Image (cartoon, rainbow, N blue to C red; front, top):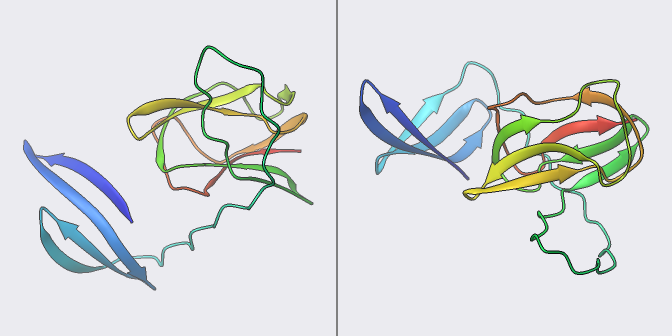
Length: 145
């Protein structure tokens, strides 16, 4: 499901969250499986929204970042994380006006830096992440109103 690397008092730990049911999580720490109780029940993981294939873009010198899962709703256009990763830098602030294709944030996923680009024109109504946050695929990061 989700893998983490921690160093506690100089000792490295590889932790993989394998399953979450209610407030009980099954985790694997350095090859040993544990069942742990969380103080609060985990929020359900939001599945990415299926989108029709986009028209091929003109040839570019830089590889394109994976397309984010995004959905328009009554509350705005939701820009979701296309892959699990870490937020490296946020280029917009709440209230900023953006156009389709504007760079909203940079995140690291699979050891590569990727840019999340605006999928619609509008105003940033919410930013649901901060620099350094670890996000899961489908997490809504930014809402464009």
